[in-house]
Structures are given as C-alpha cells and as structure tokens.
Length: 113
Image 1: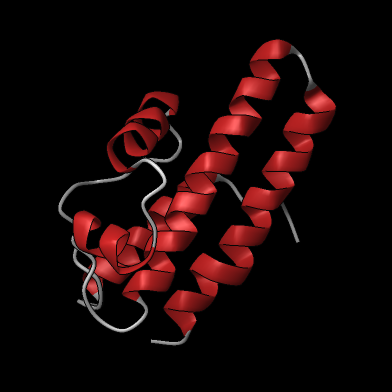
Image 2 (image 1 turned 90 degrees about the horizontal axis):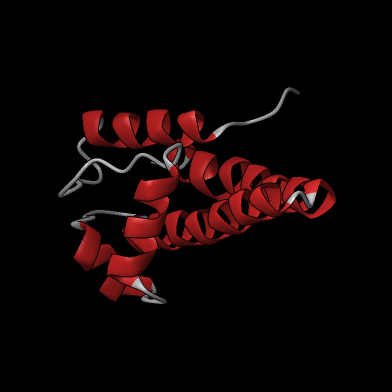
C-alpha cells in the first residue's frame, strides 16, 4: 500500500459531509501548515465530546472522528516541524503515525457508518 497523505483525510471529511453523518462548521485542510496551526491554536488539547461539539460534528462516531483529527493534526505539526529542522528520521516517524491514524481511525470511522 502506498503512502497516505493529508489530502486523503480531507477527502474523508468531504465523504462524511456527503453522507450527512458529520457536519463541519468549517473546512479543515490538514495539507496546509497554517491550517494545522490554526486548528491546534483554536482547539488546544480539547478532546472528546467537547471537541466534537466545537467542530460541529454530529452523529455516530463524531467523538472518535474529532479525536482522530486532533491526533492527526498534532502529529502532522510535529512532522512538519521536524522537516523544517532537517530531522528527516523523526519526520518520517511522525508521518507514519499520521498514516496509522488515517488508516485505523479516520478511514475506519467512515467504514462503520
């Protein structure tokens, strides 16, 4: 299986919106470093139902999806920071974590609805 990029996360978000299972108050583009920083700045370490409500998520799996996006954003930010510092080994490690979050948490959330 090939690498999973943040654009796949954004496609999953669009799929969830189309399925009317989760409604988002705003678009989230986890490909964009500025949007990742904004997401983290606005939602801090907020988790669970509180985060789901803040993001406007509704329906079955909303809390799990919100937590997965938060975890993805934090790991994505760390990976980008590592790349800026030239620490490619750690950047790849954090990108692998993002891949796992996408494959195991975000993608599976869509499949169970």
